[in-house]
Length: 370
Image (cartoon, rainbow, N blue to C red; front, side, top):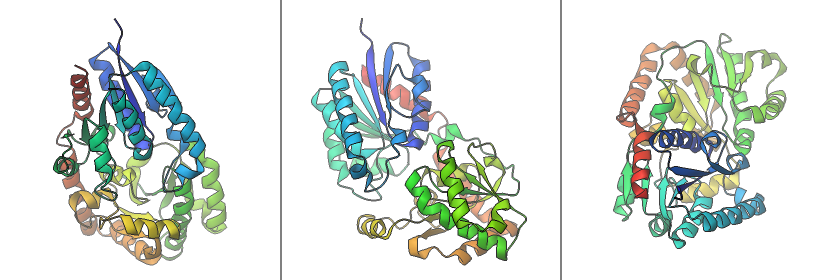
């Protein structure tokens, strides 16, 4: 008897972490289903068939579809042919809308059931994406509590089991004297934001305190890039205060973080790290985003509570002195620090009501096979 196949498509690094959790749970629940995976290195060990590491394509922003057009086109035809030949009973898409919505269209046409787990952030921009999701997807599984209501109101079947991050990070209060820098997980975002962060570091060291160690938390593949940017943008007198860390070993020791927006800002909430969110990008992209984005916050902690929990500094509003003043306040004033951490505890409570998120998602997917 032929095994049922579930095909998974995921092109984002954080979603790849969540997919690896999901595949682990599915492996424990059944040994009669084959997993075909288009994702990253985290998910690869759990795949029966691994098509490609699309996470390492490092696709981001408006220009990736053009700069990597032929690479994605080739991958698209590989996936299309695979789905036609394999005829998976279920296709599960994670984020990565531009590519995945085309996979959904192919799969639906061939009679596959399609699920979108970790949906695009339609609440932030491009709400019209819901129309295509409704057309090609049987149901969605959201990871933020307010998302399901949006999809249901648009006529899409939606489920919410919690946020899988609760399974990845153990809450801790252990701290040291490390200030963490999180310039992003994609090459282009690092190029935009690490120079700004280094200017903040230099200003802080020069005007406030030299008692802290600054650590760039990054990835092995970008080690040369980090070093080149440090050489270029940080004065030689201050380089002794900055180090590079390509693992999460010291994450629990961070007392404050400079971070880009995205999943990392939510991770810092679970690690109980006060932070400021910084996002620098080219002017043309900034103006384009301003025309299509309709939320007043860019960081997930602020969006979840619909309040300014974390200070945000975007493009021309990046004020180095103001950022350093806030850092100094949080590092020296326990009362102000505790105000922030109390808001964090509320976010963790909202997202952590269910501790078995991936298990529940896995169970739901297996139900869909029958």
